[in-house]
Length: 324
Image 1 (cartoon, one colour):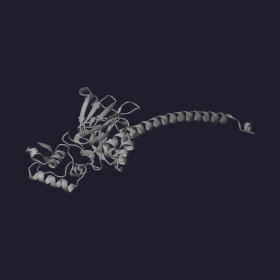
Image 2: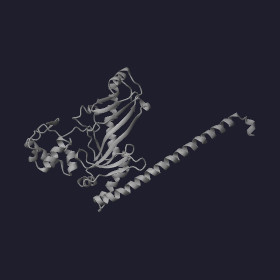
Image 3: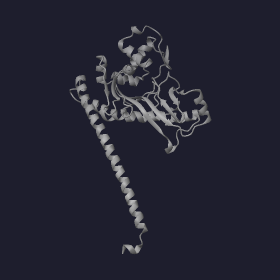
Image 4: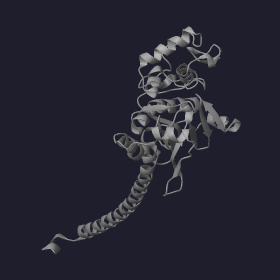
C-alpha cells in the first residue's frame, strides 16, 4: 500500500518486526513523521532511527526511494501547500502541536463567479481544507492532516501564518473575490487546539484509561483534555477563545516547571493541575475586572473630552477684553 511518496509498505508480515521496528514503521507510514521527529518522540538519536529504517528497507517493508520523511515547509515557499489528503504539512520546531484551526473571513467584494458557485454548492474543498460558503463571509477549517509544531504556542502560530496568509490570497483568486485589502481585512481565528506531545501525565492517564477533561469556569466550555491523537499522548488546550493563551501562559510553563522538581509523578501532577485551574480561574476573573475598569475608565475619558471641548468652545466665543 503506497501511503506517501517515497514511503511504501510492501505488505509483508508486519508482526515479524520487532517492537521498535513496528513503532517506527507506524510513525513513518501512518503518522507521516520525519526521522528527526521520531528521534525526538522516542528520546533517541537520528542515527538510531536511520539504523532501524535501514533494516526496514532490507526486510522489504520500505522502498529504497525513502528520502527523509515529510516536506518541512518552514519559512520557505508555502504555496506548494497541500494538494490532497494524502499529503500533510508539518513544521517541526518543537513539541507544541497546533491543529484544528478555523477562520472566519469577511468578503470585502464579491463577484458573479462567486454567486454562481454559491448557487451550486455551500461547501468547497480547496487544497484539502474545507470552505463553508456564505453570502458575505467564508468559514475555513483546516484539514485533519495539517499540523504546525513550535517550541511554544506563539511560535507554532507564527509558523502557521506562513502557510495561511498565502493560502488566503490563493483562495480569493480561486473564487474571484476580495478577502484581503489592507486595514479593511477582517480575518478572525475562532478555534485552534494546542497540544503538548509526549506529555508524561497524558501517557499515564491514557495507560490507566483515565478520562481527563477540564471546563472553564467563565463559560463552561472545554478548555483542557488528555488525548491520544495520532497515537501520541498529548495534554491539549482546546478552548475556542483562550487555547493559545492557556497553553502559552498556564499549561506549558506548568509542566516545564514540574519537570524540574523531584516530585514529578502523575499523582503529583494531577494534584498540582487542580491548583493551576484555580490560578486560571483567578486570572480570568482578574481579566474580567480589568476589562470592566478599562471600560469605565474609557467612558470617563470620553466625558472629560466632551467637557474640555465644551469649555474650549465657550472660551473661543469670549472677547479679549473680557479676560482683563
